[in-house]
Structures are given as C-alpha cells and as structure tokens.
Amino acid sequence: MKLDHIQLAMPEGKEEEARSFFIGILEMEEEEKPEPLASRGGCWFRKEEVIVHVGVENSFVPQKKAHPAFVVENLTNLEKKLKEKSYQVIWDEALPNRKRFYTTDSFGNRIEFLKAGDGFNQL
Image (cartoon, rainbow, N blue to C red; front, top):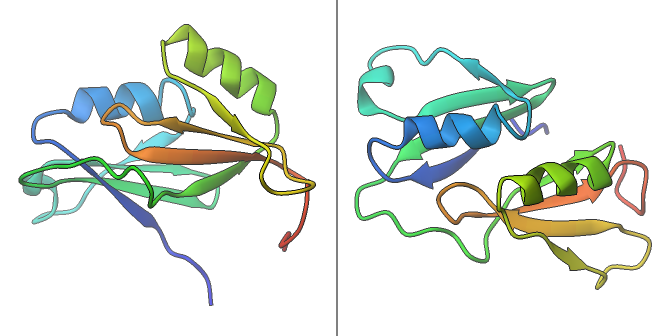
C-alpha cells in the first residue's frame, strides 16, 4: 500500500494564503487541478513524492489534533523559516529517537515535521 495524497481543509477564497505557506515556506510546487475540481477552489501541491490537496470546506474548522507528518532533511532551517513568517513552532520530545516539532498552516491546521533519518518506521 502507498499513500497517494493527503487533504487539508481551508476556508473559501484563501488560495493565496495556502500558496504562501506550501510554496513560500515548504518549497512545494503547485499542480494544476483538473475540472470540475478546479472550479471548487483550493490548491494542489507536490514536493517529490509528497502530495497535499488543500480543499475548500464550508463551515471550515481547523484540525487541531489530526495532522500530516512530513519528514524533512533540515528541521533547523525549516524552524527558522517558519518563525521568520511568525508561525509558532512547538518542539515535542515525547517519542524517543525522534526530533520533531508541530506548527500550523495558514489556516490553523496542525502539521508535524520530523528529522529525516531519525527513529523508526523508516522505509
């Protein structure tokens, strides 16, 4: 089994904020959405094998517990970029042998970042 993509929710009309986070900070590339999906709003992003769909949700409420977790090469650089853009970074040491932190996207959805090569469950 392989994960195809994850989907996060966003409020209507906030695509530029999504682009600022996923392109501007995470350095992902935007993928064109096919019709009829494009007319529904939202954005699709990719970086290597990681695919994130950010879709418009009526009555949007950010996810505070459920979250994706991305493995990155340099947590320190990412932490710096997030803080420069006024995103909160919350380090978590609850898992042994895992260096990781949480932040939120532009809409308050929780996102976890882990250091590549640490810990367990590495494929």
